[in-house]
Length: 237
Image 1 (spheres, rainbow, N blue to C red):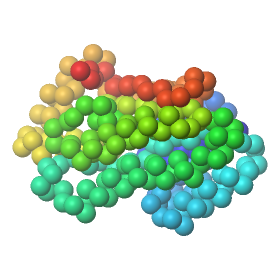
Image 2 (image 1 turned 90 degrees about the vertical axis):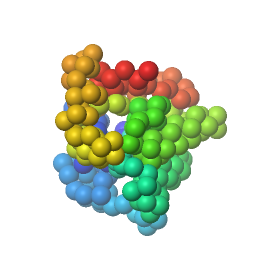
Image 3 (image 1 turned 90 degrees about the horizontal axis):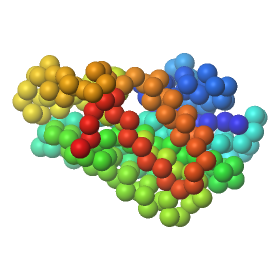
């Protein structure tokens, strides 16, 4: 049994791989750069047609240890900042990476997952559930994922899982918070104190904690789409 994880060198992707490997799963990690859990032939850009075809051939041709039983789409980029300053080219890149490449990846792994009765887990974001000031394009890309998954659930037997993290301690979040602060004309310290100073959990979530939820989502046998929000203590509404 094998599980494919995109964004395996990043915070959440690495956390997922850490937990899955500790449970004896065979993990095939992908990222733009190498890393502890990134397979040597899986270093590449998911927006590249040639690279995505390589993934399809690898995962559809039959794996040495059996079927592909799960895919975790954990890749993505931040998109914080004022809309007037991001520009069209950057906005299109954010949408391509955070939304379009996930759709493309799903189509390439659809056949082996349908064959194995597997699960497709997408790391969306709480920004795919509620709007965030200074984070409009990122929210748009994540709302797109949420809507797509809800529609997709009506047309596939694959077990779909949408996870909506909030404050998880990763480099991506830290960079996004700095851009969100600049977009609101406040300091990074002012933003983090306002947003995270009174979290019920008293701290941000950790990548490995989210990895535990990802492992649970993969194992859950419930059909259709299951959505869950784990926020590191943030309150969504």
